[in-house]
Length: 221
Image (cartoon, helix red, strand yellow):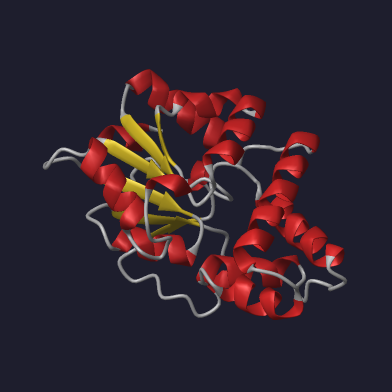
């Protein structure tokens, strides 16, 4: 992974990029709906397409069919998700362990910017200790507007970036990619071509690879 030598600061999304958590998020929405006598109207691929392209699509689809305030319902969903995290078997995405180990050895600046809350992140770090090699974590409590707004990544760059740093940002979703494009980081999409969100996607100005382990040695030249 010699390409890491060409950058000074690395910014990472979390869910679906570093850790394969998306099936657990999907299942937690299913269980939430079942508690209120409703069936989630998406299969997994449809869920991913909605979740990765808009910050409000799931709420707009689900909330009209459930009783109660959405903030309380979403809090309930997060509690279900945490139970699934603690009971399930999580794994890192392809190439992530090697990348994090290389970055730790190199001493490069690195940070996670995630929509997940701190409690969820800490639980997953306990299950996958290599994640603890990332020294800075910006969770949902740390910034105002969610992706695709640039707030989280802008905060990370303000916190860690020097004016002449070469910065690479890695995302697995289109709305996360838009968030990166609102900053001076080089936006990199990690996503398989067959992913539902890729249909009609505009990747102009974006580097795109199927996985972390597929990033070539020449990247960044």
